[in-house]
Image 1 (cartoon, rainbow, N blue to C red):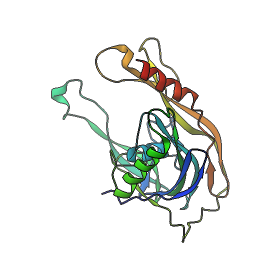
Image 2: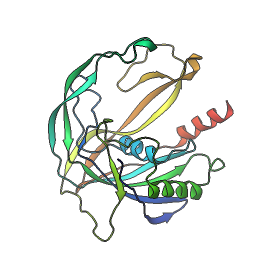
Image 3: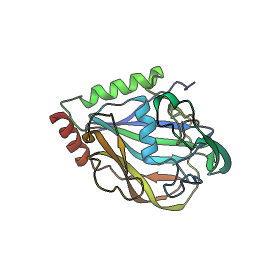
Image 4: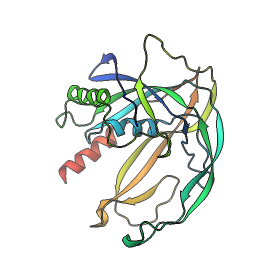
Amino acid sequence: MWELAEVKVLSQRLNNIMFDLTIAGNFACFTRPYTNSSPVSYEALTPPAAQGILTAIYWHPGLIWQIHEIAILNPIQYESILYNMPSFRAPTKEQQDTRITQLVRHLVLRNPAYRVLADLVTLDPQAIPINKAVGCATKRLQKGRHYFQPYLGLSDFAATVRFTDRDNLPQPQPIEQHLGQFPHFALYEPYDGKGEDTGIMRRPNRVGEVAATLHRRSTVYFEDAEIVKGVIRVPPIPTDRYRQLVAEATAS
């Protein structure tokens, strides 16, 4: 079961409140997009994965989680495992339980632990005030509520989220490493389903069975990143496109 998570307000600047959380687990796999046949994990928790973990705890269409820093608390240790993955999805509803699986070798992280500093950023102040959103997120964290089990890359790698102990502050590992192109944030944009969809991590996902206008295309944006003294500093997410999507959804 998911452990009780707590959050502490560190500072309030403008309308944002910073959350200081520790995220850990036994294994993690933040798959590099060019290693699908034999997945290899990135060296550390990626910002989109951190967003996904926090979204599992609290989500609102007018808000996004913005990650500021990811500190690596444990040494980077890789381990090779065999992971049972489905290789065939049944085309009919009656055959959904009949799936062919195969063992796929994964290069995963062992005993990952991270300290994450994040903010809730409002896209539509009229939809939900930021102070109310922070209160809702805090209550859900304190009561251990979540929409689905937070996980570290793969659904079998459960994540535990807890308040960072300020009296015994964990120190990041003394790691200095250039990561190169590192996932920054993911954006799900409307897609009409026409034309050819090319490029890594740009695949149309149909939502519903009514019309082609319900397609969504997942686009992951990358930034050059590096680990400095065990900390990955994440640049701010450009929220203009998010606000435009919220406005389009509200108008429709």
